[in-house]
Length: 205
Length: 161
Image (tube, rainbow over all chains, first blue to last red):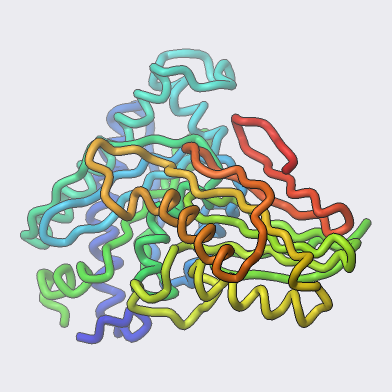
C-alpha cells in the first residue's frame, strides 16, 4: 500500500468510515448513558484535508473551544481529540454537575476535571470498539484539556503530521444531544504509519 | 478600513501600509514578522516546524523556520524593504498540553522558537521583540502602518509588541 493518504482507494476510505462508525457509536452510547439524554451522531466522515484547513472543521482557527486530547498508544498509534464549542462545554458541565443550564460562564477546576473525564470515557469507548473490531491493542493516554482557540489546540496534532506531509486524514464524527444543547466533534487522527496497520487488520489492503 | 490580509498555517503573506496581516489561532506554531519602518513594507510568516531537513516532506517552504524565513525575506525585499532596516518580531511557540513524559514533538513550540532565532541571526535580521512560550493560543496581527504586532489571547489578554 502506498503511504500517501491521497492515494487511498474508495474501499479503504469506506473501511475507515466503518471504523469511525463502530468507535463513535460506542462513544455516543457512553455519553448518552452518562448524561441520561439521547445522543445522535452523524455518519462519520473520513476527510483528507490540507493541514491548514483542518481548523475549519471545528469552526475556524480562532473559534473558542474546549478540547480534550489523548494520545493513542499500541499497535496503531494516533491522536484522539474531542472538541466542544464553548457553549456546548458549559451546557455539558451544567448537565454533569446538576446545575441549571446557563448557570456556567466560566469553568472551575471541578468542571475542567469533569470534561477531561468525559473525554477519557468517550475515547476509551471509541478505542475499545475499535480494538475489538480490528483485534489491535490500542491504549489511550491520560487526557489533557485546553480551553482555547481551535487552531492552537489542533496544532498539537497537525505539527506531527506536518513532518510527514501536507495533508491530514481525520475520521470525524459529530455528536448532537436531543435538546440541541451539546454539539461535539470527535476526531481520530491516525499517525501516518498506522493507516496501513489499521487497514490490514480489517482485511482491506 | 484598510485591507486585512489573512495568513493560514504554514503560509506567509507580504504587503505594505496601510494593510494589516493577521494569522489566527497559533499554538506551538510561530508567527514571524519582518518589517521595514521606512518603506512600511513587511510580512507575516506562520511556521509549524523548526527544520525542513528533518522532515520527510518539504514541498511547502512556509511550513518550516529555515525555508520559510528565507522565502519571506526574498519577497519583502522584492516589495521594496531594505535589508539593513528590516526588523523581526515573533510570537507563539506555546506548549498547549503538558504531559509528564513529554516527547520532542510536544515541545515543538520551544524548539520552533529556538530555530527561528538562529535562522533570523543567520540572515542578520534583528529580532526586536518576542512573546513566546506559555500554554495558550495566540492570534497575531501586524499593522504595516506602525509596525505594531498585536497579540490576542483568550485568557491572557491582549498585548502589543
